[in-house]
Length: 94
Image 1: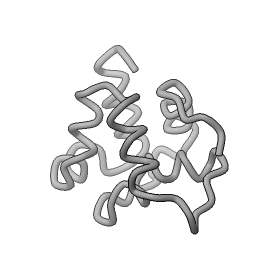
Image 2 (image 1 turned 30 degrees about the vertical axis):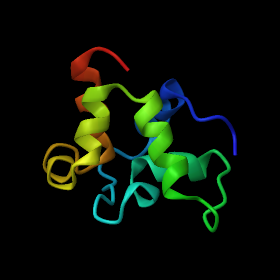
Image 3 (image 1 turned 120 degrees about the horizontal axis):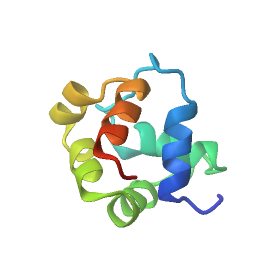
Image 4 (image 1 turned 60 degrees about the horizontal axis):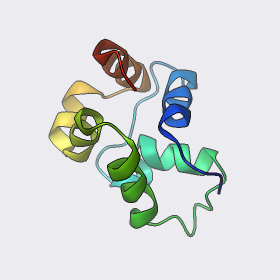
C-alpha cells in the first residue's frame, strides 16, 4: 500500500462521482477512508481497522475526523462524495 496522505485523500474525494454514496454504517474500512486506502493498493482482504483509523486520526484535520467518526453526523452531513468535497472546501483547509 502506498503512503496515505491528507492531500491524497482530498484528491481521491474530488475524483469520485459527486453522487456516489459513501458507506458510513460498516466502519472505517468500508467508508471513504477505506475506499481511499484500497485505491492506494491496500489489499481488501488484509485491510484493518487500525490501518484506516490511524490514518484518519493522525492525518485528517480534527473537524473532518470527528464528522466521519460519528455515524449519524457523517450520514447527515456528508452522505455522498460530492457533499464531502463541499464540506472540506467550505472549511478552506485540507
